[in-house]
Image (cartoon, rainbow, N blue to C red; front, side, top):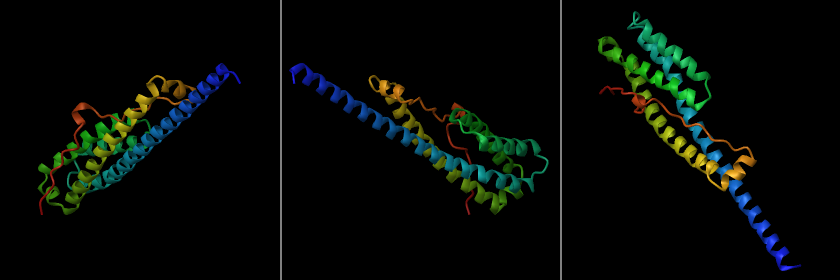
Length: 187
């Protein structure tokens, strides 16, 4: 075996080892982003499950506030069917705005404000929003790390060769980046 063939063999072995390492890193980062998305999906499902209960609780007190109730119901129905993080972020922003309007109704309706069922639903939604904010930050961090690796030279050679593509961030409108503002009733 000549020195050049030995050097060529070692070089090929190093390139192959790097490619395996890069591929495995991409798989780990992609799976981390998928797991983080599953966490967001759990929180969104919890929020979506609360919406019909909120609408039902409010309906009994504010029957003539149809526009707010219909907006919340329609947006919830849209959100449940979406899977694209970008599009879902838009609909979730609109849903957050509609829920804020729904909670603002309690000021005009003292009976609603005094309802223990409504107060418990408010507390549940605050909890969901806190978890959702954390999940959103974790997911977007995982997507950032994954996208950085997919786009970085020389990793992008492996990424493109094996079909790894950029993942979408889950973003809401700038005005809606904070959790829904819900006043927690004191007992």
